Image: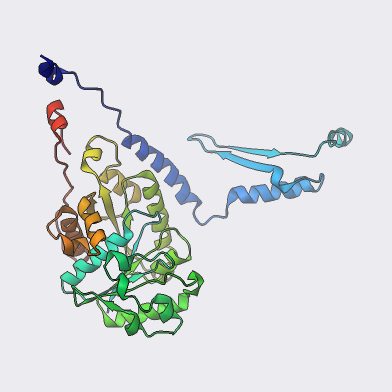
Length: 96
Length: 271
């Protein structure tokens, strides 16, 4: 009986194949990387130039400037996060 | 005039050294005069895979620096009399490898043999650049896995821009060699397929080497798999790939997996 049960058992569902996902991710990534090849690092350049502009007005720590990029299929976003020293708010108010 | 062939990949651990030893031996088995050159300064392993680790006296850097003459540094294979190894240095600073020195050695080797095989280090730094610098042809070793395919794409870009041939407006002839191919996993859709890889990399296929214990056994005993177990599946795949390099047209054999007992019981289709 137990032998029969063993053979008649319904097979466990097989995990969904992941290879098509790998293929799609690679195609998107490589299309981007091939385009960027030989170009200067855009993110580093942006970071440097933004830093220069802001530094003209406030003293800031270069390590506290973070530039992030999120690439999507349709739109990409660039996020710039600058930490300014406290006590700067008054200056902004005076300028406006 | 010899052909210079670089065995490269970008990613480490995909089988460059195994491939250099196997194709080098297979070319010599076909009667070609072959020198295999290890460019992996500091992490040499081609000597070990070829079973010549106890016979290394001089190395590539000694020759670059003029401490030894090229014929003194070449180690002749004990099994194949027309196969030589030029080992990498294990201790020297890798900056000792100069572009001018490498060019001189490759030039000298070109005049004295039919094939120069350059075993590239992993990565895209100086060592990898120098290994591909003078190549006429390239074998890009790729595993059916995302990181390996991405790195291969990067290396293809470098072969098309940073080599002497590319700078002269000529082409480096490129071939993809898929290694560690597991037919059972491919059949289950767990692994990128051959077609996926070739479509993404847009480069012709030289061969498919199945994942096999024979490859490990061959490296354990320090003998290229094409010599150690010539009738094994990986050896036959390497021998076919070598014949393609020599200009033959052969049907491509996609390794098929054996059906396991459970696969039969469950009625799964094999690869």
